[in-house]
Image: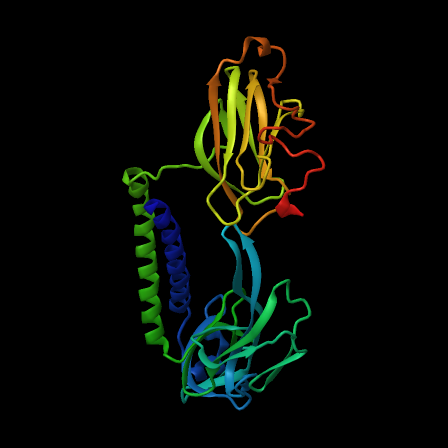
Length: 401
């Protein structure tokens, strides 16, 4: 378990470290020049057109953030929908809540930076890599009826038409901006006299300045790479020498017998097991019910290699174990476990499966058929005076009405 956790966290940390490493590499590779030098001589950029600079913001045409109305160089407004729904689980019915992102609105401005040597243009309209400040955070609670329009500060939004099957309880707007004042560092590609987004990577902007941004990016890069590498490498001895977790799950391929194992079905058609019988005789197949509020209405179906049904049992009533005790010849069978009504629940139905060998079959049954039993026919279930072994065709479960 520890090895698996380390193997998940390690690569994630390593990936984050590499993202910051390549960002650091881009900033280090981009020539740094005064704003006036870049404006007067575009040739100061490197062969890829990359260049960086730092200066005072000059933004007479700053954009307005939609919610707060504040002037800014760039903004992002994320709209989320909060919802709730009732779900049926094995523990009963419960309310489930969640949040789904509806959309993200982005916008940027053309502005200038000037360190006193002359102004150079910056194009932030295509997106930026920057530390944004939160300027608006609002939730609008919804009643039973979803309105056609929602207002977040100064922004009006039409409610989406397709909201999903859940009941919407609220909409939330979060606005973040890059302020249009102060000193700013920029690193990007020189395009038509303006520093802009360099292809698939981002235009780097920061109010902290070049030195501070390089320092923090370097720390994050090396921390991520070192920690991620150590965790990833450390997962190997954890896997090899760590405590072993007992696997109680059911195998998909079973030979002869299987001890009580845990499994779960999430599909309406249940779950199939390939069962190989190498020793003919009497066998017991049992689906053991879990102690939960809403257990699986377990149903067992066994088919031979030709697809013919040769065994069936559904416990006779909701909450009972499905139990099949019959003689089986050598061969390969398909064992299917499902809910009687083909229903499903959130998280799936859990159960335990047991297949045991009970000894040789009675002499009269050996070699006469794939299955011999005093129980009713598997293909045409019939009621019994004793505990029912299968549902008659006309029988309806009380809970399935």
